[in-house]
Length: 430
Image (cartoon, rainbow, N blue to C red; front, side, top):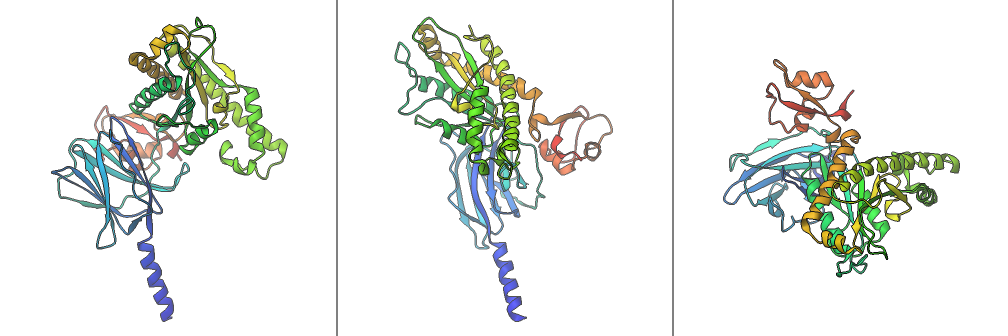
């Protein structure tokens, strides 16, 4: 009995100190900076602010670091650096050195969308808590709405320069600048988050580009290029989706390793299916993906058409390897012919590259406005508050929790006003 008691006490002691912070991901945007700590289990945490200099302090009860935390980029608008240390009580303290005063907000997320437990810290511009004050927060895990993730792929790179224009302009440089403009434009959109497949001038295989998009669980993939042709008079932008022939060859490739393909069709395993059934399931998934790609491509072509002559007025289809992810709608955008002297000159101009990015993000906005993925901010319904309504009544009407409704709309309290517009999370019905 004594041995059992000792084991129970030892187990309890270890349980209090084994929550691990397994990683940190950061997404800066004009509205807020979001930091997501990947944690091994839900934990109690405390958040407070300090001034002179401005800092946000996060104390994580009984937590340890699995690896050093990632540092913010040099051009991050909010964060200077991130420090950490273990306190005497065994808690992990994380200190965010800020570039300006920020207001922190935290919440926990349960496992989902390919991630485990997460602690989300949002930093909003403006006044924070009173310096030196703190409050212990035990937040119930809640599944809040997520952003639509757009993977942006700048073609070529490194030893592969791509096409070269008459004046020596390299395709890899032009498309990377367009990709960065598109990244900034998407980051400014409510409910969208950009990720780059390559973040510098280095070579990345076509399959690796697809893998990186899938690692980020992208909802859409855009590969940016600048075309070339032996006839320098040829000009105009065009948009490509995957062809059926390309889809068929890719299906054969995935069926050959079906044990790894369960996530391609909504989590249904292909490993225990016969060849015919597995082929039908994968074909259905690919057909839906291609249809989504074609629909979004039409919107993007319209936007690009406002900038100048189009090379093709309809979305084209081809077997480009980079478009072959069966579960991610994908497009390849030829932004113009770098082999055409006048188009090469336009592609070298920052204002034209910005115009291309805006046309593409406008196409994304229109497409996802009509076809928002379930569980995303863009899929949320809207409710306008009328006289006499309370937050709890709205939550009860839509069959969602008050906590989730509050978190989805960044509300600090249950106070609402007449005419206020609330986002209602669709995925939490029932």
